[in-house]
Image (cartoon, rainbow, N blue to C red; front, side, top):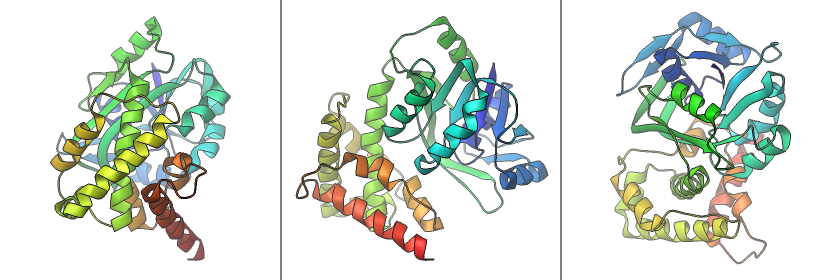
Length: 303
């Protein structure tokens, strides 16, 4: 099974690297700068789950080839360009597995490629690229879930499962992937929301009594907004996710917070603006976080 990973950054590079480490047929679609970097030093992963150095196959957009699976881990603000880039690689049998946070990207992908080609997917991982282009994966959690949007398990999906599982990173098939994605969206909205608002890792925020109360209020606002969009959650999801936040390392930051520290763009529209209602007095915390991110983005444009 031929697998194309779009990008070789902190997420795609990690999971693609683990699949290549296992022996799967993995190719990375990369920009010229990243290609030069990988050609010189290889794909390097440092992780508590085992380091790895590989020399993977690399291609650029425009190559004449199709793949069985295309793994997307791009940022949402790059999605339109990525859709154009991957169209030539898509055949009738191709699956597209996005790992983007949120839900809005599913509509864009299914409109372009059809619901039968697009899978649901998510991952839980803390990873980043250092200045030398090495992937630094630091969290105990480094797992990925995938499954059909239609809920239909087919022989081809079972074949895909055989190829994706068995790596050093837990990759698992889910029969409840839509619910899993809403659960993840709620978690990342809360986690990235408070860490970006306070420019802080999670530890100092939850140490404050008011900090934990704000976390609960934000979870409630986000959950209500998502339910208005048709979300279904696991039982007692608020209590489960609060416990997850309490158990996180005190130094853990969201990827959105790390992007801000690096001076990169952020997914404020995809994650937060899509949740805002038309009632201007509603959702005060969601609106505060979205405003905070938009101020940051406007400052970036002035640099």
